[in-house]
Image: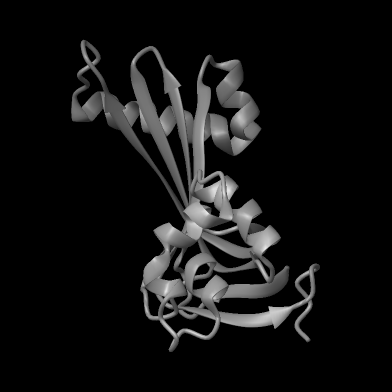
Length: 179
């Protein structure tokens, strides 16, 4: 595997999301960061590419994957085919990190947090109730983080990280140290 350090170009563009569910109510927690660094792993061999494909695309064989990505594998002008498939598009201004084989190296200077509350089915909530619940959840989270929410009966459902803006990519070792 080749390793790259991925970082946002713009400050205040890294956002973590966590969702929690309780009694037909979905609570989404958003935490924004000024900066963040992530390790991205890019395959170098067909065997490593097959591992990536199994994890991210669901194909069983290298042949299936290459057929699916034939527009890249048949394009001679693309010299780094694995990077074109498995790495970030440096022209894009939105990156959902779950699209990559990544690890968080670190985040710096959390600068905002917000709760969004949604009710489902018979749990249609007024804006006033949503606001009150968001304030209660923030108090719990500020003191006990996710454990406090779980103690209150909330179930953690999902987590993802996004970068809203362009990114930089620098080759590094498997610990994230640039070479």
